[in-house]
Image (cartoon, rainbow, N blue to C red; front, side, top):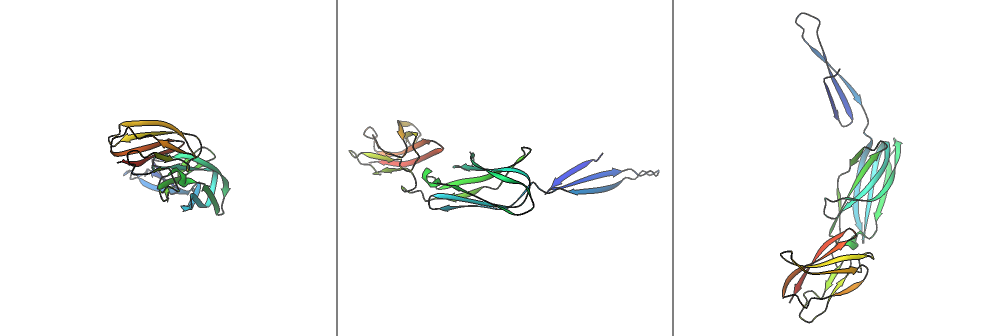
Length: 222
């Protein structure tokens, strides 16, 4: 019976205590190392912006019992959600290249989008890659916007959701203490008037929620 087992970088070492039959009973040790290859040797993982898309690419040097890669995305760097799945090579000793395009990733209006890979073996064991980020310019062309901003008294305010996919979104107007000053349900892929006549002059946040979108746009009411 071994009295210790250590796993590091795919190597398993067993350390045995062997009693000495002499009267002094001095123990000796013997180490047996078994080299076990890692299930997947990921040698490269990159994510870059190309216009409004995010292009992901990764390479494995070898694979063993690799069932699939799950591409995960987050907008805050923490709450990752599965975006897509790519089948693995099973078992292979040759390099394998993978690509995935997150089309229109910039439309959500976040300056940074976070990606990682979840590699799943055929037995269900999973491991994660390092996180990669893609930077997008947070401009009206790539995300929701408000105009005119600042908004003067008597001017209609427009919230532009044309950069978002169709579907319902919750739009909240909050003061800087987080207190609600207005709540609306608006459709994506359209522009909408936003009533602000009841707002006192000052600074506010317009928060947009829905379909993996969670962002806040600053608003100044003159």
